[in-house]
Amino acid sequence: DVKVTQSSRYLVKRTGEKVFLECVQDMDHENMFWYRQDPGLGLRLIYFSYDVKMKEKGDIPEGYSVSREKKERFSLILESASTNQTSMYLCASRGGPEGYTFGSGTRLTVV
Amino acid sequence: GDSVTQMEGPVTLSEEAFLTINCTYTATGYPSLFWYVQYPGEGLQLLLKATKADDKGSNKGFEATYRKETTSFHLEKGSVQVSDSAVYFCALRGGGQNFVFGPGTRLSVLP
Image 1 (cartoon, rainbow over the protein chains, first blue to last red):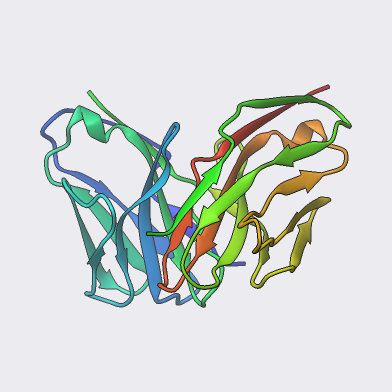
Image 2: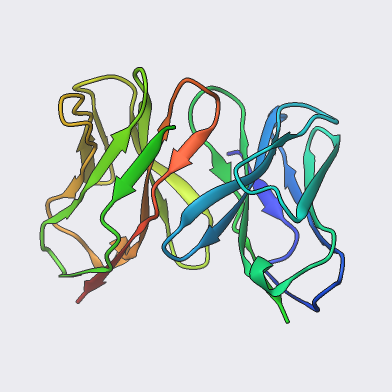
C-alpha cells in the first residue's frame, strides 16, 4: 500500500515563527498536494507539485510556500505563522488519474 | 468553476438505520465522482468512485450512483454500524488534474 507520512500529528507554534510541515510518500508518485481542512469549509488546496522542483499555487496559497527538492518529499512552509493558519493540514499524493492517498494530517495551532 | 455541495450534518443515526448523504455537483464536461471517508484522527481514504454516468460505485456496504441528469452522487448504506461514524467527503475530478471536495458530512452512529 502507498504510504504518505506526515512528520508531526500535532504542532503548537507561536505567531511569527517559521513553520515547516513535512510529507513523504513511498510509491514514487509524481503528484503531491497540500490541503488545509477547516470545519464547514472542507478541504482547500494550498499548493501542489507535479514533479521535482515544480510547484503550482492552489486556491489559497497566501502565507504559504512549498519545497520539492526530492520526488518523495513535499514540504509546506509557513513563512510567518499567524493565528488564522491554525488548522488541520493534509498532504496527499497521486500516481495516476484517479484517487489520492492522504497522510494522517498535522493539526497545527498557532498561539 | 467546478463545485460540490453536500449536506453538512451532523447526521446522527441509530445502529442499523438507513443512511443517505446527498451530494450534488457543478462541472463542465463529464467529471469522475468520489466519496472519501475520514475516521477520527486519520487522513481521508477513498471509499468508492464512479467514472461515468449511471455507474454505481460500492464498497463496505456503501453505494453511490452517478446521476448525470440530476448531477448527483448520493451515498447510501442500508444498515449503518457504530464503526461507520466518520466524516464523509464527496469529490469530483473534472477536466483538470485536481480534485474539488465538498465540505464534508459528519456521521455519528449510536449503539
